[in-house]
Length: 529
Image 1 (cartoon, one colour):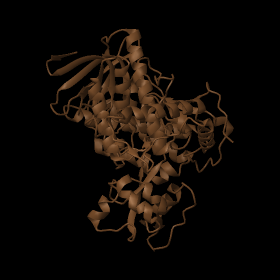
Image 2 (image 1 turned 90 degrees about the horizontal axis):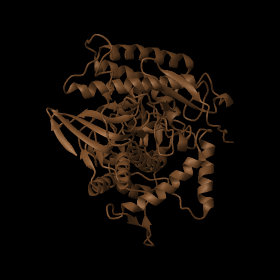
Image 3 (image 1 turned 45 degrees about the horizontal axis):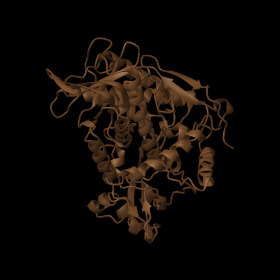
């Protein structure tokens, strides 16, 4: 399957999977079990990289019997999805997750309840990812660790036929010609210091858009997570019992329910915010070291008892990670709008199951398991139906093949600009039309500069492409938020505080030189009561 060219590792396979997190490893296993030869390339080390490896993921896990259990769960999710999710997809995901997780027996040591019943729903992230690495190794998947993809390859007929990238250990380039490609590159938090997300820079969105793919749901990016100030420890479970204080020591009123972001953000715009966890029940305190073993580490380092002492907190934006948007899915096996290109996990839109609110941990994990397997199996079928890998042309533009005269572009300054537009509380949480139009204009000017002038050379190619990807993603997010001229779910417009029936549809977005948006009117949707 492999042969070497000068300074280029050249490989062929039926299916190429880009990304080695939860969705990517499930995709690789499904493609291999469907009889395809599979290569998986990961930006980090497959088995430790990605947001799952630092978490304790639960899954949307509901028994099939009695049937009313799933019917009720789907009905409740529809009520909170603001008309953008799909009950049929939710049923498919529940069933796929239910039948999939037990297949990890032999690779993962599942816990048991006091009655000896195996518990499949919640897994510990590090062991989970290590088990998935062992699974794909056992199936004969070829894995290239520390080998980020830089661009896709496209056949003359428009279908995707592989990718190119770089091996970070050696500096050597790689190229994989494949019958079909699965993008499982995750979402992006725009490097907000979200735990486990440092390699998630939106690369898959940019590569897919260069091939002509559309995105959906990119306006839903205003999910934020509480963390101790100056830390990346965004494990949020314990903050369900938090009491927040302003700088004067007065308690900040937080309404009952899950909505804490907006009052905390308002307080943070006024000054520093502090927190303690003294209301945490004793039984929960006892379980935290097992459920989130890394949660207490920074407090121990600082000599703080979070259940007794107050500590300063902040909010980290989660972008499209616990947002919803991603590549638009056009078929039941998770093909994008480009033939031969499939998407899974956070690289794909999660509107189908989450609607207009964040899917959170359990929904997103179930989506990653399910979409990964559908995408992997779909890619294997596409490769079989359309013949072996064949040559194509490389698609990379911004950062690789600038449209104008090459000149120095300050990548740090560009990233600061993206983060200011996408993470600032007063722009991304408290939105209005004027601020969104300003963001669109600022990001547009930056894109013209980067696409025309930036050229990454040698070890700087990856960073240049990452910044271009985050900038492109920010443009699609801002344009979609401006196009949704209403408030719906996590997208709240201060100048449009109501939900409008005329927007009972998903918003599609795409384009690089010129960003476009349009309503996805092909699917009739009913706003949940």
